[in-house]
Amino acid sequence: MRRAVAVFALLLAGSAQADSSVPPSPLAYTQLADPDQEAQAKALMETLRCLVCQGQSIADSDADMAGEMRALVRQRISAGERPEQVRSWLVERYGDYVTYDPPLSWVTAPLWIAPLVLLGIGLLIARRLFKGKAA
Amino acid sequence: MKKLLIWLPLALFLLVFALVVNGMIEPSDRLVRSAMVGKPLPDLRLSPILADKPGIDTSDWPKGKPRLLNVFASWCIPCVAEAPQLLKLRKAGAEIDAIAVRDSTPDVQAFLARNGDPYSRIGDDHAMRAQLALGSSGVPETFVIDSRGVIVDQHIGDVRAEDVPKLLAALEKAK
Image (tube, rainbow over all chains, first blue to last red; front, side, top):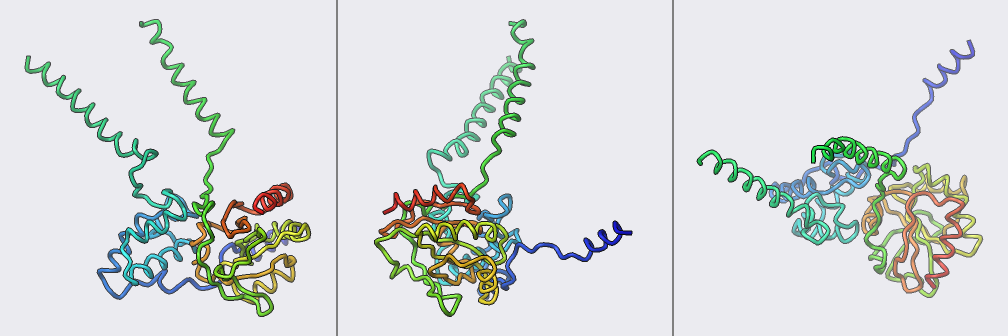
């Protein structure tokens, strides 16, 4: 009986809320009126990392912080900023980690060069194989 | 050559094993550190969230003494856990300002009444703009601001008892 009461009490208990009760900024879930600007903002959002849900872009996430980052992107784009300016504003604060489109630097160079090197190796191997057949 | 090759699978296995063990002993670090450490405070103008405490305006930031800037929220549970440590820091002479993220006046009042109030000033960051401007990616976080208004350190997560001396040392160094 006591166990049943305890289980029932657990069912009644609310879950612990770890999110704000303040409603999100309007621009977190509302598109911009100008379709060109909205398209620019959307394209940028898809390449920005959600910092609290790190595998997702801010366009994909319902986290509070992702919502506010979308609002920030839309607000800045509608104020006339170019997407790259907004991106660099965020990179200045969070480092390259915040963008899914990493700029070329000494640290990221392998990311950009490795595919080219692999392609080159592939071509070399292919050439050797084809040569063998022709002979 | 063949004799050596026979050991290759074992060598590969050991390599993978070592990677797994290393990953278990030292899990990868998923914290996002602010790139603003080392830079001056960004321009922040946050209205007060409580009637009896000023908000945050970095254009008239009190210089000459290092301060802590605590990013917190009444809805954040680790913020409750760190409250006693912040009170200890306050008692030890640290000046602590705060940014209340996506919060309301009654919630902050209730939070401070329950957990104690170590803050000199509290700014209302309802749309997370100040948090984003600081490069902060969660609550709670604590920034150390030196006597010239430059961010010199960032503590991510709740301040625990063992962090109190570290933060006091950072404040001392930031003079």
